[in-house]
Length: 83
Image (cartoon, rainbow, N blue to C red; front, side, top):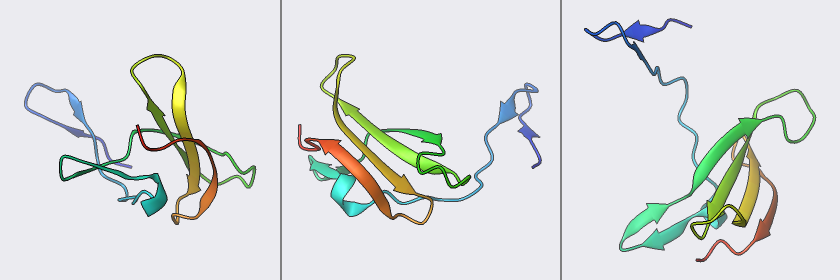
Protein backbone atom coordinates (compact mmCIF):
# COMPACT_ATOMS: atom_id res chain seq x y z
CA UNK A 1 0.00 0.00 0.00
CA UNK A 2 1.30 3.42 -0.92
CA UNK A 3 1.31 6.13 1.77
CA UNK A 4 0.62 9.62 0.47
CA UNK A 5 2.12 12.73 2.09
CA UNK A 6 0.83 16.30 2.02
CA UNK A 7 2.99 19.44 1.61
CA UNK A 8 3.96 19.28 5.31
CA UNK A 9 5.32 15.71 4.84
CA UNK A 10 2.55 14.35 7.06
CA UNK A 11 1.20 10.94 5.99
CA UNK A 12 -2.38 11.07 4.72
CA UNK A 13 -4.96 8.31 4.98
CA UNK A 14 -5.59 6.30 1.83
CA UNK A 15 -9.07 4.82 1.34
CA UNK A 16 -8.77 1.08 0.78
CA UNK A 17 -12.47 0.18 0.66
CA UNK A 18 -15.76 1.70 1.70
CA UNK A 19 -17.61 -0.44 4.24
CA UNK A 20 -21.31 0.10 4.86
CA UNK A 21 -22.72 -0.44 8.33
CA UNK A 22 -25.58 -2.92 8.54
CA UNK A 23 -28.91 -1.02 8.59
CA UNK A 24 -29.82 -2.49 11.99
CA UNK A 25 -26.79 -0.72 13.55
CA UNK A 26 -27.75 2.76 12.28
CA UNK A 27 -29.72 5.49 14.09
CA UNK A 28 -31.35 8.49 12.41
CA UNK A 29 -30.65 11.68 14.41
CA UNK A 30 -31.83 15.07 13.13
CA UNK A 31 -32.09 13.62 9.63
CA UNK A 32 -28.52 12.24 9.71
CA UNK A 33 -27.49 8.57 9.65
CA UNK A 34 -25.31 7.85 12.71
CA UNK A 35 -23.43 4.60 13.26
CA UNK A 36 -20.99 5.03 16.15
CA UNK A 37 -17.29 4.36 16.65
CA UNK A 38 -15.78 1.46 14.71
CA UNK A 39 -12.97 -0.88 15.72
CA UNK A 40 -11.30 -3.48 13.50
CA UNK A 41 -10.19 -7.03 14.33
CA UNK A 42 -10.82 -10.72 13.69
CA UNK A 43 -13.95 -11.24 15.78
CA UNK A 44 -15.09 -14.50 14.18
CA UNK A 45 -11.75 -16.34 14.32
CA UNK A 46 -11.63 -17.00 10.57
CA UNK A 47 -8.48 -14.94 9.96
CA UNK A 48 -10.38 -12.17 8.15
CA UNK A 49 -11.03 -8.58 9.21
CA UNK A 50 -14.33 -7.88 11.03
CA UNK A 51 -15.75 -4.68 12.51
CA UNK A 52 -17.12 -3.72 15.90
CA UNK A 53 -19.53 -0.77 16.24
CA UNK A 54 -19.37 0.87 19.68
CA UNK A 55 -21.95 3.35 21.01
CA UNK A 56 -22.00 4.90 24.46
CA UNK A 57 -24.04 7.46 26.35
CA UNK A 58 -20.97 9.61 26.95
CA UNK A 59 -19.25 7.47 29.55
CA UNK A 60 -16.93 4.52 29.32
CA UNK A 61 -19.69 1.90 29.51
CA UNK A 62 -21.06 0.99 26.06
CA UNK A 63 -24.80 1.09 25.46
CA UNK A 64 -24.48 -0.92 22.23
CA UNK A 65 -21.93 -3.26 20.63
CA UNK A 66 -22.45 -4.82 17.22
CA UNK A 67 -20.07 -6.96 15.15
CA UNK A 68 -20.18 -7.47 11.38
CA UNK A 69 -18.04 -8.86 8.56
CA UNK A 70 -16.36 -6.99 5.72
CA UNK A 71 -19.32 -8.03 3.55
CA UNK A 72 -21.82 -6.48 6.00
CA UNK A 73 -23.09 -9.73 7.55
CA UNK A 74 -24.12 -9.20 11.17
CA UNK A 75 -22.21 -11.51 13.53
CA UNK A 76 -23.86 -10.43 16.78
CA UNK A 77 -25.14 -7.41 18.68
CA UNK A 78 -25.67 -6.56 22.33
CA UNK A 79 -27.46 -3.63 23.95
CA UNK A 80 -29.79 -0.89 22.75
CA UNK A 81 -28.72 0.91 19.58
CA UNK A 82 -31.33 3.63 20.21
CA UNK A 83 -29.98 6.20 22.66
